[in-house]
Length: 512
Ligand SMILES: Nc1ncnc2c1ncn2[C@@H]1O[C@H](COP(=O)(O)OP(=O)(O)OP(=O)(O)O)[C@@H](O)[C@H]1O
Ligand SMILES: Cc1ncc(CO)c(N)n1
Ligand SMILES: [Mg+2]
Image 1 (cartoon, rainbow, N blue to C red):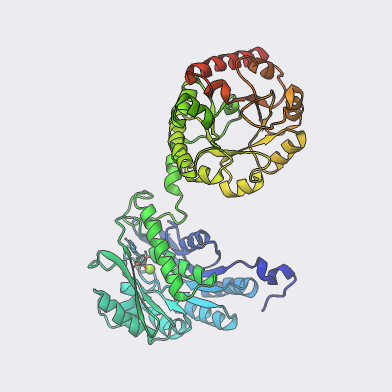
Image 2 (cartoon, rainbow, N blue to C red):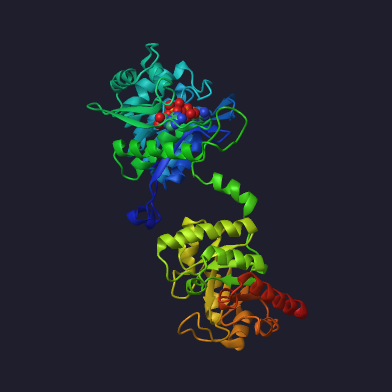
């Protein structure tokens, strides 16, 4: 049954996303199978739907059990997805029975798809059998002739050929690719992950005319569980995005190499077949667990904003200034460097990020999202004419801190709607740090604080002499004061910060 289109957007090319359907087995350890396919497609920006052919009980040691899904029910899943969702590419993994292969090849003939990528899964990396020899004939007769590319590993290549010859060299891989091509697929990629004789990881592609060798460094890691599934899914994803098979293999190979390299030292499970990190994020988050904590509005209490001119005037480096402010009791740091080049800014930002993280003080960058991303700052502070907060949130993700400068209740409302974490309100007093800056005064600050749904830090001309006046307003949401000159345009940053901190704590204490 074909889909009845009742949503015109579904047919509009501008809204279509590239889509791979994977027909494969579930891997409970989530390094291979359906789970690897979902992650690989997500990493490559391609939608992935799933038809599950088997459920495996599997971990980093081996495969403990396999439960094959009834072939009629595989057929039902295929029908559900193919009749409605029009995937661009179908990718197959574990197909554990001849009946399942038959149903699949019938569905592929009924619902035409753009391309078919067949990973002829038979043996897991741990050496466990995932599909026995009863499926070989079905692979050869029903599926390979429909395939745009088939991606056997060394053992699978020799099983498909049925000649019992072990593949030991790149020349053997070429010869196997050529013979498998004769079975009917448009391209054959023989994978050499297990070619122990080679110090590189070499894969051989044959397109019926030419051989191509794809080489990458052989990454020394235990985490190679699911490399084959991932490679095939990534090939499918790139083909779904419009690449040729050749370019898709090139990108997929690079992706697997990069992900393995990134994940070489992570430890998940105690066995010798660990999963790797498809999204290349886990290593950072493991470190983050120890050092990063969520933003707390009380971090705004003594907010120190750096200024390059003041550092030049006093002959100090940015990092020395930041270190001094933290020693004196600053509770959050913002790097605001309007006059240095990007390279110098980034180097300074990296050093300051480490100092702040070491002390557990949040570290923000003024305006420059690129610098914040490159140095992994805790967030950014933006003005009304900088990048809109909503766009910044999309770029930075849900956990980074975003502060927005606001002078009016309307701007405060918008900052909240756009997903900011706090607002900076000022100039409360006239200041030389920012040219042509309108002073909102204590009244302006008060009305913004009453209207704001976000915590507020007051800024502009605040120092030891007047911090008390600001904080004693005791208006809702006011969490602290931000200072520039009061700490950085001084001979000794740490002692000035310390004095200011005393005033702030006394004022807050008096209010409470
Ligand atoms: N240690 C490694 N370093 C770099 N690339 C590797 C490594 N091991 C495998 N590869 C690459 O990963 C891809 C998958 O190859 P492999 O021969 O491991 O497939 P497979 O045996 O089907 O994998 P699996 O069964 O674990 O899913 C190939 O491109 C191969 O070259
Ligand atoms: C479910 C499943 N499919 C494929 C592989 C091949 O690695 C595996 N280990 N498990
Ligand atoms: Mg494999």
